[in-house]
View 1 (cartoon, helix red, strand yellow):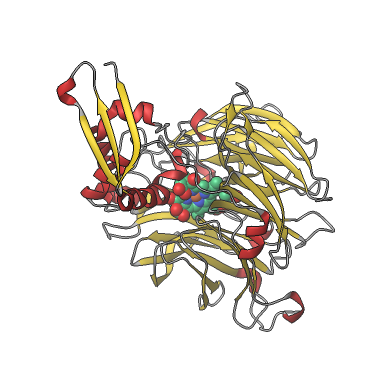
View 2 (cartoon, protein in one colour; view 1 turned 90 degrees about the vertical axis):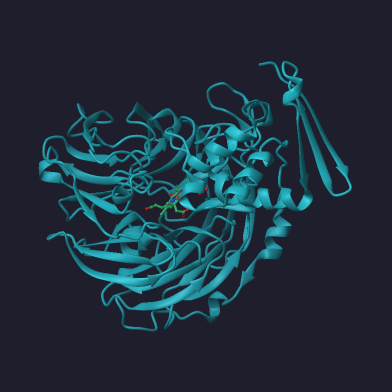
Length: 537
Ligand code: DHE
């Protein structure tokens, strides 16, 4: 059907009038009216729910492009149904899940017919204005003011509450509940482990000091309006000196002081895709890790498909090495030696391998549909030696590949096992520990209620045995998500992500529940200090 579109973003009073006329069917002409208030409301819903996958400028990434040329052809009815009920391709059923009302789905469908509007940029000066040094370094204790085993502390994200809860992993006591900002995404530990760095979807970064009597927020800043990643300088001689925040919007990364969070340097990521050389206005920064071989951060630039090595040894003359990876880069983790970083390009069903010692890509290979490793899981396979693994959003599968090019070169960077997960797709995270023989997987985005209310566990010594499913909740609005080990590697902490959320703690050996910590608001990621500072997973 040929479409003649006349969009008049005319401001008529407080009303934008959008009129669409279908040449083949004049009767089907529609007129859409959206008030400024409606546009603001729909824009907020889009920011909260859709940008992560479709991009701020709606050019598409993990989700397809939603530019007006396409959405106007689809029409509001189709769009509303997709927003409400999802698609088999992985679009969540937002309406059915209760994330929005019918009216909101309809409003959002109409909003998607408008031209996308770029949110404002943020200058270094504005970032500095947002900086809040709550406790300066010289007012902080020199050593822990408590006798707790602080390297076994856990930081738990309470996503919708915008808080971080810090637990003593030995006693399971709640030590502090700290305000972090809207929809906090992840925590990372500083090289010394003393600080938890927080990054939120709202682009706010914070630092929690674990040496104070009670864990304390000591600094915040807002270098982005949307972000997902943070890390710190970990190379010898630079421990705790600098931090980096990767933004989704504006498309840039920001280097900050590692003790105060004072914003120091902003580096734009706009540029050309690695393969087609096409200009992209919104290359977002996805996962960041800190190299153990050089003073560099390894940064996934999602839309252009480059992995940047950002040298922080001289931030007045920053050197950046751009390694061709794949599109669209998302999450990823280290192999057990911490030499190889393995990001997932989930829309190309591909894993990339970066050798951070030689500072180049050494492999790129296909796995299953939409790999989503989080930081992945390393273990020693009884047949194939040291391996790394991922689950997939798009199919019920664990992909396992060799990571030891020296002693097991025949398996290195080759998929050696494809373990079918009979309950199906929707996996977000996978986890084990060097001391464990269990491989835990979640099914967070699976559409079946009982499946996403359960965690799965595989036996590393017998990977042909079907996954054992353990239902953790019967709350119809809750999903099981993300696993994390304690420092000793004998307990696994798992979130029940819901309004009446919980952390369920398993004895890893017996696979029996040891404890349930109730009363948490939408707990998602959990980060053990020792395992996070040493990249153990
Ligand atoms: Fe995440 C990691 C982005 C949805 C919980 N998430 C990451 C990372 C990125 C990312 C880039 C890697 C950070 C790093 O290692 O430096 N996440 C995104 C999205 O863009 C996406 C798809 C949509 C969005 O709008 O945010 C998204 N993520 C989610 C969720 O829906 C989850 C389950 C709950 C939430 O917070 O919204 C979620 N993401 C997590 C967690 C990690 C993570 C717990 C860290 C895993 C780890 O063990 O390191």
